[in-house]
Length: 609
Image 1 (cartoon, rainbow, N blue to C red):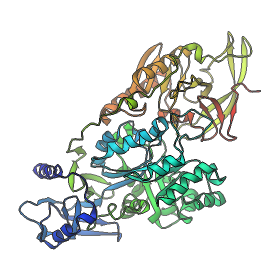
Image 2 (image 1 turned 90 degrees about the horizontal axis):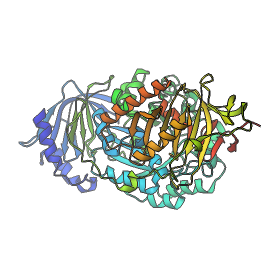
Image 3 (image 1 turned 45 degrees about the vertical axis):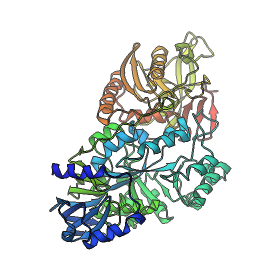
Image 4 (image 1 turned 120 degrees about the horizontal axis):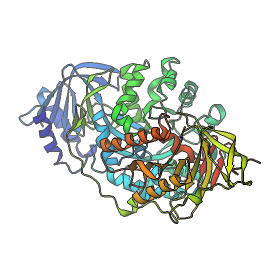
């Protein structure tokens, strides 16, 4: 097999870019008729036909350049220079399409992400780069688009719709306006408008929100949804704006109502939030038609990619929950392609389609043996077979941390109205593996006029430090639920504006952690007694590393151990922490401007009363 792979990849180097179907129709017909010989023939596999819902045994697939010319018996397309791959006893499946993913959450660049997910069978992704957009605006989106060019992973971009996520409540690095959206929708590779998180703006007729939606509809692009918790009249009103999908279903009823209203229901299985088990019941129990169900990852962290894989894991989970294997494959291929209007090229194994094909050892276990992208064998048995050139990122991207000045312990001190005693304060209560927080009120001790955190009550101090415009803003508060006994942890990944966020038990370690991240260009760190005990450097916009996934995982594992050393044993603590600053999620959040009651959308003073 090795010589076959090498021969195919030599051919790949001759290709300047992917073919357009209209340019190769005669070539594909001639190949199917045998007048031209195929470059690659896969012979004797069991074909998962997502178009008809059948499993067809002993089928051949003939490939010319980067497209499929014939499915059936392909002996007449084999010539002296044709590479033949035997697939007897194995399964031929279309390359998986992730219909909603934030690459930045993997902490690696687009190139390294391609290197990580291709061996697991993902050949196309539909990304919403709103993390980097909140830091760098449209320049960040363009950066990811440009980096994706030439990769064997097909990358389609949805232009972020909510930058910033909560205007007036936080300082973002950029703003994307309806005019910006209209311009970006014309860019090659842009497929639609990204998740519309501002559902109150949709329901109440916000001009900016509807201006962006209208721009997408005029451009004949899809509008992606984010409507967590909406049901009945409000959900119908949300869909009436022309939004056609939602990935925020967490309950069976969410899936049922979205399917009944014609929305594509994207079922998420990420790192922190795993919704397949519950939401798939709209198919397995309610028996609703699955053709508008799409499997997605949304956010997968490095360790999850390493240990569980990517979309192959989500398909496997759907099968484990009782979905027919062919139906589960449809949910990760054809359904996704049809939703985005690209089924002419991807999503199935059929003549004229892009030759993105997986060879599985086992269908129900989704055991990926070989991955073919654009007619090239790019991975085998979990290993990439081609090298991906590392991109060059400009200084703008690598120097995104802009503090007014270094942070001191005094900057983080919370003054009390009394010199000693206690005070009642508002506290953010985190819930393990949950998006929501609780709005608590707790009594904390005061020492020498300064409010103190409390180990006994599991309450740490939290600060959000503005890092985009050198305003000097610092929002201060308290958070419970992490279990810290000492030290501090800090992160430049703090959704969605990605200011610097720090949680700790003393001001000196907290200030040290913030200044360390400013020094290295961003990332995540843990500090104890003035020393770094864990560090993940993320210099690309303070969100991503340009190191390979394996290396990033090593750093993340050391950081996880450091969190445990400081007292935190929470599962997925990084994501839980990173959401403390997102002022569109219930109930209490913190930004660089202060504490935000997101139930009433107003700032609250730290002291009660």
